[in-house]
Length: 85
Image (cartoon, rainbow, N blue to C red):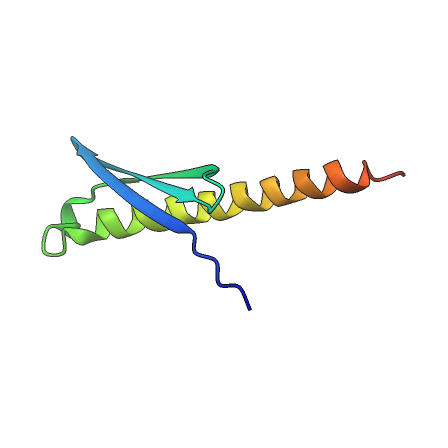
């Protein structure tokens, strides 16, 4: 059995009260898919500052999953042709 490895790198930046995250998937053939997420800081989050990071990253990963699904669907259409109604 062949093992494959894909890599997801997470980039987090803060600007004012906003946290932005970017999740970049790199596959073995060096194609990439990128998801993005954002969270706004709530003043009650001060005791747990990671909340903004966690929310932004989870949203970036969710966006990445949706985009990857779209790539797979496009590949299927390319191989089989559009669905006939």
